[in-house]
Amino acid sequence: MIASGTASQTLGTAAEQCAPFTHRVGVFGGAFDPPHLAHRELAEAALEQLGLDVLHILPTGQAWHKSRPLTSAEHRLAMCELAFGDLLKMRLDPRETLREGPSFTADTLMELADEYPGAELYLVIGTDQLLAFKTWQRWAEVLELATLAVAQRPHPGQADPQNFAAAADISGVDVPFVTLVMPLHNISATAIRARASTANGLGPDFDRLVSNDVASYISTHSLYQDPT
Ligand code: ATP
Image 1 (cartoon, rainbow, N blue to C red):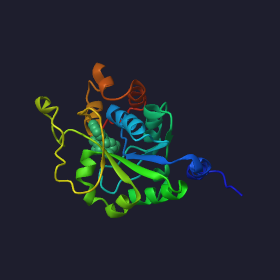
Image 2 (image 1 turned 90 degrees about the horizontal axis):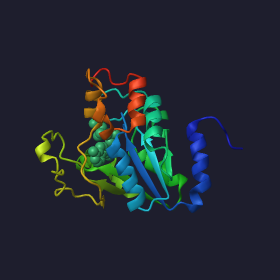
Image 3 (image 1 turned 90 degrees about the vertical axis):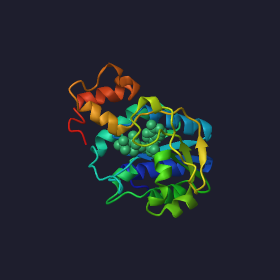
Image 4 (image 1 turned 135 degrees about the vertical axis):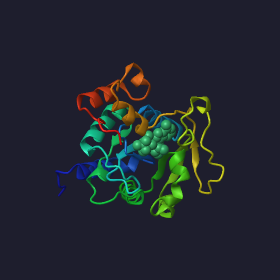
């Protein structure tokens, strides 16, 4: 008998149903607090360049490496639906927000490997995460389960617009990965939250950072009034 009720059970059933036809599975996790236009472009690049059959978008639960309390999962899932919902082959996957305790990518990949037997898993990340990869919990397990698919991101902390085009230096990285081609975008959720908290807040050029739908959602729900 198939139980009904929780989102994860529903998702598991759907995944099992399409498993025989699915060969290339993308896994794109993040706080998505909020999801911004670089996230969107990264999702599109992964779908197209990796020839994915499905891309799971996974807002994190309480990420073990982020000390800041995240905006509620309900808001982040709603914003992800607005940001990515129209992408064919996208599946918004709430499992990490439903998990008790800290969220580990290795656990998510193990679950997906079970749900899509024999599939190739691709873990989609930016270069900031690639550079920090060996600080991840159980990173060696992650490498056994998935191929890292990495998009360039400007050097962390780079605020000077003169250096806008300088990509993070990944020459010292000694883990295997494939590259996703994508223009550099000097966009971060941190900067968006900071900006949303100011008096001018969601100003006229906010649409260079987040979609109009996400901007409206932030405004309607008065998110990010406290910069953190
Ligand atoms: P924050 O500023 O709160 O740390 P963020 O903007 O880095 O957030 P996350 O949700 O933490 O966004 O990122 C999810 C994934 O998207 C990560 O793998 C990250 O490297 C990637 N990513 C985020 N912003 C960019 C960007 N501008 N270019 C390329 N990749 C990005």
